[in-house]
Length: 193
Image (cartoon, rainbow, N blue to C red):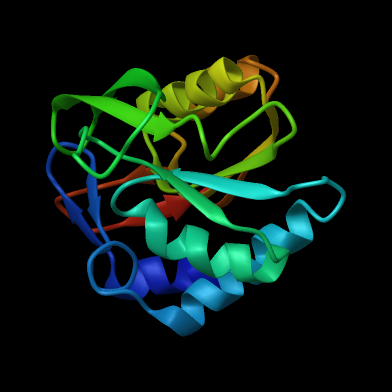
């Protein structure tokens, strides 16, 4: 998606350790017009799928998942990174290691919100090593629901996550795939799609 690639080039900051900082428009301050275009693109990419729910993980995926859900006309469920007193009843649970925070989270979704009749589109802001997606796939499979696909805003194509998920046979569509980036020059190269 050229619009997203152009925005990453303009406002993205490459930091040491393979970190791409896009908090000025994607995962801290959110550019809703850009989100709307990304949501429209996810709808176009997955128009052939019978999606009735979107699943994401807190916190950075929630904004784009909500905007995408408007284009699909479906609800969003987000996996929580901690048990809270307002989640009653049984939950699906998995462990996820965060690339950004270098921490393992226990992630949960109430069994009330995902079930065997659901056709799920997983949406997230970033794909690096694939740990978050593997956890979300695990949650959907635990519920007996169908994964119709995964939509990612920015995939780091030079890390293993995309390959891992694609080898599972899950349809993965990334709006921008970073082929390489250099923290010394700030250069970002995108994969041709």
